Length: 82
Image (cartoon, rainbow, N blue to C red; front, side, top):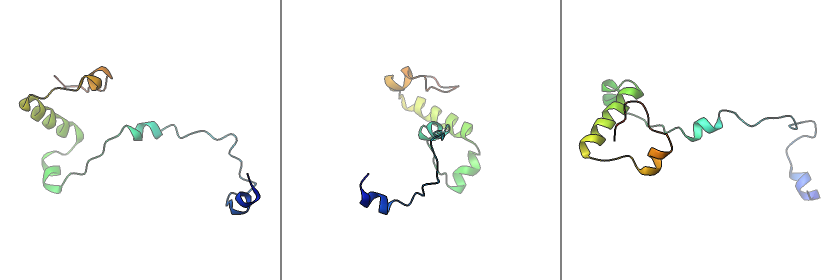
């Protein structure tokens, strides 16, 4: 670190992160997909299970299939059928 970097550093010397650990929950949030539902849709689909069931029905009716990469990764959830 140069002297310029040390002068601009806002971290005080007494802060010790040598025994710190990374956030154990970070991976969960990276894999999480959040979608905001409008009030009228939320009234019909009150939870994620009902939304997923409706979307799977729509996917099946459209004749879509799960991409191979997704199917192989084990991400498939309960109730899902190709």
